[in-house]
Image (tube, rainbow, N blue to C red):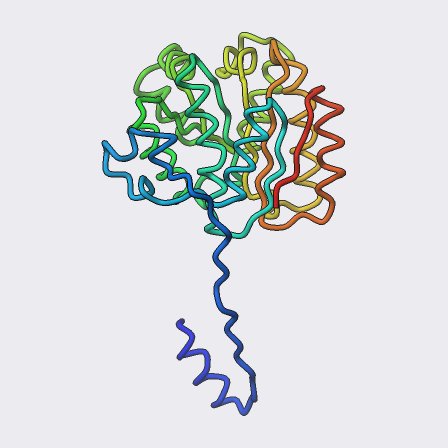
Length: 252
């Protein structure tokens, strides 16, 4: 049903209504283009190549380069994915940099996943989308060892909390029984996107995952929290500092 249909139905039912459309707000930009930081974007025709970074993207990048955790609060469509990918690219070019990216559900994150896959292809990084469904399909095609090999070779593993929690429970009981065994040991950065999507119970699960993953990794990973809204970002930063021993910045 489109907006026009909705308006006609309201009129037919005798309702009065007021429609107000707020103008879009363009975040302030810098003079730095994506191509200046990721030359491969221009070479592969990525549409962002000649676009200037938003100020919040550049501030986020600066915080991550310092080795800090990050809480990035910005509206939908304002380039939160690109903010952490800029940092991933920098570290990837320096050597292996294992990243886990967590979305509430992969089905609702198609746009972000497609962009990440496109960017990874351009820069030569390997991305693996892994949840319960894709795991079962991969096991049928390649066997368990084939899935383990794919995880070992991936630079970015995209998953959801349910699958991550399931594998983490297996790891805690018998470490090498988890398909993500090597990733849990070597993860450098964990990105939790769309935090505003979660219920309070879901956020409690995310916080528990952060605590346990920080303990299982050989080195405390950087944590990136992306959200459109967050009432208590400073409290989130306090928690991230406690669990990882890293500094934390809030960028809005």
